[in-house]
Image (cartoon, rainbow, N blue to C red; front, side, top):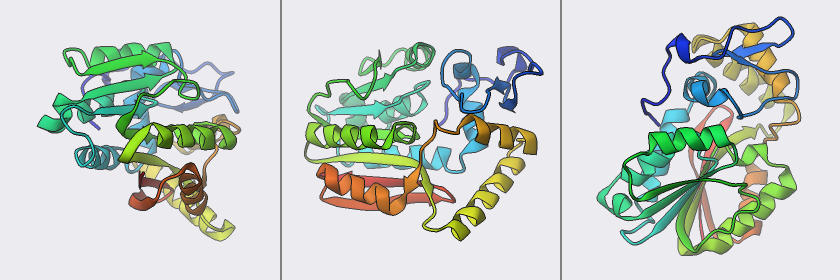
Length: 257
């Protein structure tokens, strides 16, 4: 997903790292197990995720293309964990049909919601709502996208939200779920992690920042395997599921009700 809300200008970045707080890249500071999307993170969020996730842009393109197959001019689509509104704006403008549908982005962080409101300004078919997706009452809808969102929910909570998404979708509606995934065994997990870290270094992060980010995500990010994601989607009530995009340890699925 692209957009001009977040600048690489250092004037927009948080202050220089203090010695007591490790730097995790792009001016963001986070102690072990303390990763958060609150506060100043919204100012550099897009830069940081582009330096961290290999398929960030490709997954957004896939989500938009998929949405146009399920959302009609009178339809409704959601983005769960809409952050700064980059994907939400693309979904709402991708085709004439998408532009005639309604789109709702939900994020629990006030700073992210404020950034999404700014980024989606001028789009009458978009609403940016500050709310908790684990409690939000979804209306009957046609398409739901969750990009790098569900992985931050506890696994039992994630399963409940997935069931609620399925219940809200019309028959034939679809859920695009894209998260970090674990490899099926320890040897492959080590290999994929090594390749991911090499990718991060090529994208501009230092070895220290990569290690600090891993530490900051302990207990916060809870990825599961491809098979576990498929099982969760089936148990929620989805009848047709396929992997549609994958790069290293990130994978996106489309699940049709």
